[in-house]
Image (cartoon, rainbow, N blue to C red; front, top):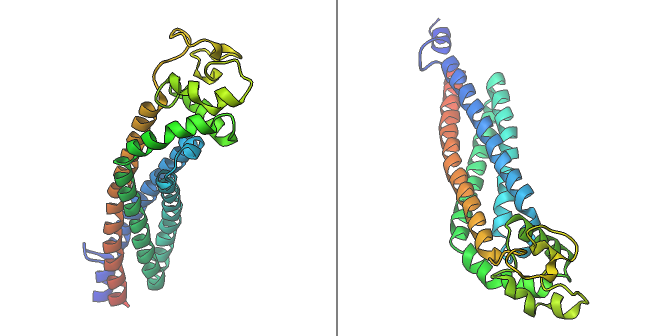
Length: 248
């Protein structure tokens, strides 16, 4: 009778721990979905610009977020299964997978924080060379530069003057002074005029840098913030394991 009461009633009972675990697991599942969404959103919105980055830290953090989000959803389902069956082996596996996800999200937070402080210097040093040397010759780079100039309403890396000394200007038969993607209203041949009414005079590097830094802040906050959830999960799963062992 004591065993039965210990299992079914009281804040220290097995059933109470199982119910609390299910609540935690739902929160963990939602957090995993948020992490997955952020990773996919980052990849879908910025993947076109990866060819302009010499450092792979930014896409790496996004892919780790996606992996952590997918794994979180799978592990949450594993947790529900382990508690439903009261299987201590599955519960141990669940705990170790939580630790792995915790390390992945910590890595994302640290990488995003470190690269946020380096991204401006990296882009200032390399983006101008990419614009000048690769536009019109590299398919991915050309597409990314056109997309960037239209999205951020900018022209050139540091300014529209970059195009004067570019390979595109000197090694192609173009009559344009700047690419058509520089124009405020894009149309074929519109890049023949450099008048401020036709093209923006600001370069892309500053706007792109600020946008990347904002996204890195979000990734850092999510990575470090959501990793706390796994700590509570590991503690809770260990407590439940002990209760199930004692109950047996």
